[in-house]
Length: 266
Image (cartoon, rainbow, N blue to C red):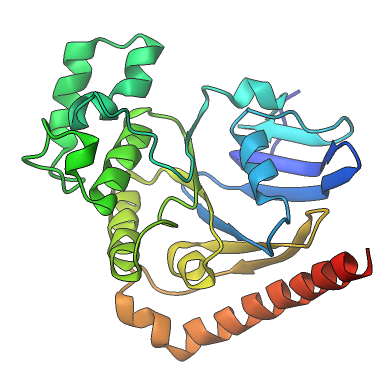
């Protein structure tokens, strides 16, 4: 049944149990079209489970409500309707930059020649001009991530799910990639759900920051980030940024302590 919600993705009372482990319980959130929502939380809070459900790789337990574009659906129906990028770039070593970038569309059945032409046209925007024939082993970590993100963008879907895509990069490259991603996002305005363990990254990128509780994962805090865009590197030292960071860190630390106490007592 269609609803009047404007959210692209809506989750209500979502739970997921793996044997004796309750990964998610009563989880609820929504993501509006064109919004950039970041997700943080203590270790083991269920971020990966959330990723798998939204990606259509895992079904939640019965009783919750999952809607996409206002219509109720099973998680498996999101597979193919959501583009996602896991933590590793997963580039195929025998395919060059262009052929790695078009892989998802090629599997989908798109014309290879047409997709190669589209990918070549996007190379400058992704900082890959002149590297179309290079193979993954010839690229830096940041360049490999740009190829993987280009592949995700070429697989044109309304919701992009990114799981710690910059987690393996050094601090300087990560900072550059964050600013680059925001530039790409502001030009294309894709809806992004971005999972990270880095609080600075979550605030710098997001329209809203969602903080998850310790397991079982629920929403501890949903913090709107009312900082000006486009965001510049010096923003992270501003009083406004610092105030949001303190609030988010307090929420995470409170939940991390609960998890630590529970594990110590077990």
